[in-house]
Image 1 (cartoon, rainbow, N blue to C red):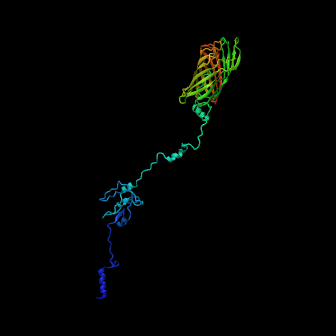
Image 2: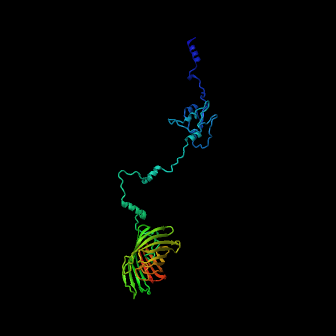
Image 3: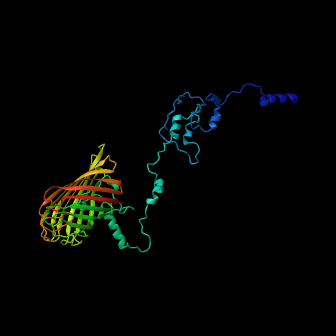
Length: 449
């Protein structure tokens, strides 16, 4: 055969080249395509990609709920197991089971419940107390309990005394010697000024003038008068502790015609002592104080102000405000009582009681009409003078007068300011022997800090 014929036969037997094959549709390989949403994707491309973590993508704007897809024969064994990440922070280890093609079937998408459980986060709850913030805001209060290196400096004796005094008297914090202004609605009594004590702790200077008429039938003086001119002083150490100078001044004795005694004027006895306000009822308007008065006969002999050695007078004073809601004003009462104990047999002993009632007109703390009662009861006679009467709060004659005298006072007090006040009172006997007491006029001026 010719050579050309043999070549043609060999070409036909071995097959035609790819370029020479007739054009026809290619058959799909690798199984049917997989649908992602509405777009078909070749299975071989899905197999080469990592499985999606959030399941099948949802188109934007598509809010219709989609049913969870669970392939037939699939058993979910990882619902309760938390997903773990590989050391390289790559794809989750569950990707080997989800997203890979099942044998003989399409790729299985990851259920959204698994992904949601894997990406769930616990809500942050701030701690109740931030230790850093607490340290920054309170670091000034923190103290180092460790002592500083070096020798320890001992406290001075004056420092110890100061601390003890502060415990007893309290810390005034720059207000030493200032009056207690918590009860400015009260006023001090007018009559019996040396014994009827205000229960408040006060700092003040109080000039006093007293003019007392003597009955004409008094057998020793036969009339005349006895006068006091002087002052009182009070110093408030704290709002509870105070020192009171009850009597500091002079006495003038002016007997009537026919008396064996002469007119004389001299220094009065000095009365002073401490006072402690042990109850301050800021809510109920009550005050209670106690004190001890020393009656020192350091005055002039011609005015009968040097009798005996000394008298000790413990006393209690109680103040009360009431009817404070009354539209026309409120009332204040002060009751003081005590006993004068002599230290020798020259002076006379007596019990006394003073009651004060005032009306705070309009509750403006300005005008105070008042009434007062004073009772003196002598319990022990003295031996200084052979006289049958006594001089109450002006003179301790040391005479023989076991009797009592009750007097009444009407008057008032006007507060120009809280630091300047004027008081007047007119006193007359009500019951008992009059002795040296026919009537009395008392006036004072209070200058208070």
